[in-house]
Length: 261
Length: 330
Image (tube, rainbow over all chains, first blue to last red; front, side, top):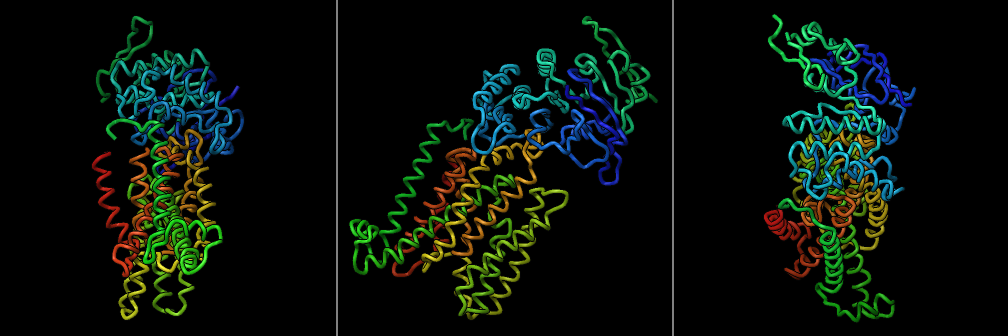
């Protein structure tokens, strides 16, 4: 079991405190949503966990080992991230993009295990429903299709932990649900741990097993969605007065009403 | 590219066509010149059974010059292709990392101040090129390298060294002819020692560049994504910049400041074969060799007995052709 633990994480950028002695442990095999107001440090936390930024105090450990001491390609086999604002050269097809996810498994020019690579790529394209446009250029896809293609690339890494940075930004409602449903399926079928920064609290309520709320550069609350999310918390953290309902799936839904004066 | 992706069949065809171009340009470069040498004599000369002046011309002048042209073309085109990929900037070329200004200043320093010591031009230019590249890399470093900082530091350093070049040319305006020839780049009187100087770089760097071609593909996804799939971005970028600098330095220190190959040839190759560096790098190398050999041949015979520097011919013929490609393919 690969435990991911953040201990006393502090980040300052240009003299501004972004994270201040933040500590959190992520439950194995669960979907954890990180929520919080703009500027609370959600993306900074995710980038540190992913090893994209190593400029911090404190430590992030994976299975007891500081991730700064794990080689980039070894880390990429255990932990994959779907960052925001991904780009591709104009003639990159979906199949080639997904194949890039096998990079950490390959030594130099030749593949060491081509069969395993091919199977991982096919599997990743199947679970994200992008097989149908495998030969299309990535730039010709719609926003939702493109996001799924990049998700397939991350999955082709066959990670134990999947990190998502606001995966539904800029997508319409149907494509938002599609992406969240795929993530849920992967989590439930393959037991992959999912850690996602979400700005839509209703998504966190519907699709997360656990919610971590960031406020003032540290973790404010962590726990099951129903127990964490309350009218008081929304007022404290976001400064918003909200009504809370239960929808027909039995999930909690919130509707912001006004700013707290 | 009209939304289509070049298929494998087309890519293989393009590579094959480039190979034919290299062979044709090489043959023309050996056979044509102020003395035309028939094909049969080339064969006997290469087998060591030829006699007379034709063999002398062939073995001591034509063949080494053709090889220098091919090696310079390969080195500059590969260097440009690598730099465009790691800077993710279509305007990146060996000039950007200070190679031209560094080699230019040191080369001209020798040509103008010590005109009797022309043998020093090549080593001095090589040192100048590598020195300028290193200076720019150091100046651009701040918690790692961002391509935009390299480009801006490169512009500043090149402007600074360029001022030195201009000052020297004005101070020594009576000797400026040799410096001008060096500035546009030329292949006349290049021979076996130059081949020996170039080929180790060509071989080592070509192998290294091919080994790194998948890394270059990954870099095109952006730094974040590249790190995410396990690429050591900073280290890769440093190694590849060093390879590109060595390739370009070896080339410009031998032939002077050939500007066109490192910038345009990789673009032309990319338009025809796509952006997969496993194919783009070999394609750029082949096209670079063909372009320099063909241009040099043309430069020798077009206005014979006057020989134009190859740099002029290459830009004059290559730029319109590239514009044609650009209109057709994009």
